[in-house]
Image (tube, rainbow, N blue to C red):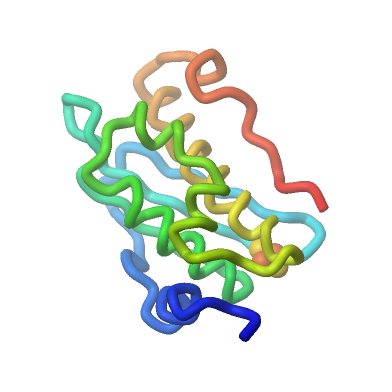
Length: 139
Ligand code: FES
């Protein structure tokens, strides 16, 4: 089987699909090569805890599964923890992805960072030293 049970589950029943209207941070990232786009919405409280996360992904099944898993992994966590979320952690939580689909998990990692970047920008804080550069997955 090419895809793990968990990937199939998160693809068929993605968690946290949708938008947060009064989000505190919104990030959108695309991959020019495959044309997939991911949009991430975060609700963050005054203590810097991510109380809600939702996503909309126009993309492949692995992109849907990785965004679903990424939202699950950061919900209830601090911004610091979310910044530590790597695409590798998302892939591990999904019990692996085929090599050609690793870039989809990078999209999820970057979508989270992009939304956090927006969160800081809205607060008048330069996100670059905290979040770093947002980059499109290369492949
Ligand atoms: Fe592009 Fe999956 S093929 S994100």
